[in-house]
Length: 309
Image 1: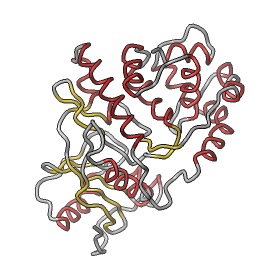
Image 2: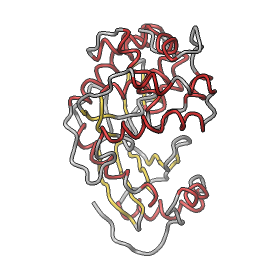
Image 3: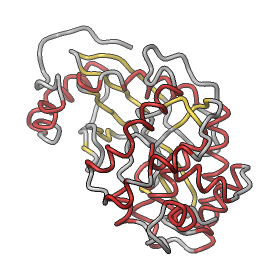
């Protein structure tokens, strides 16, 4: 569904700097949100979700997600992937009610799924519930990777191998710029050269983390936020669960991998470490503060500790 222009109701957001100025300004965004909901025939008062890089609102049993012009290319990805996975995963995903452009801003109107973010309920979960979530999530990722990627025009990256090559070439410098100590950065080129990274491309979520998983009564009730979805190596999707869910917990991570159908081994740990270095949103200095300290300041020791199975 596409709405025709009816006048300017949105603030300027043609680049990241402009969007940063208004991303949390509800006085600036409110008129556009209300006009769009009226055009879509959605009653009720929108309530902004407190987290997330894009504006997302709960409106009754629906969710409205907005894509400013600077992120307009992400809307077709979210809408297309949600349509492709609908009803095909053991973990529920939002159904799409409408998607399109409204005065230059993209939008997706989708189902509001039950449950609370896993990040909120994790401390209260029992060991058995965490085991169950690991297994449910592993099965869900396997089902996701079995879904044929939808046809999305100009879906980035169009060439996975080229993306990986670019990430490899820039990897050490990018992490140094983020504050990585020289003793770590110096290891990156040799480590990446020693790890085989060629693999068939599958449909990836890329950010399977606690903020994007919903839980109720100890069970996963939703996987959300598909705008960063890509087509690439399946193992790329196991970086975020390691960093933001398992955090060195071999029991959780091993159960997740086995439920997916993977037999863990040392070579897998090294490949997962390589994908962690290469991930588009990777920040090794921050991860070194967030995750358990490896036995030695080497990438091989890091692989053993962070990807315990």
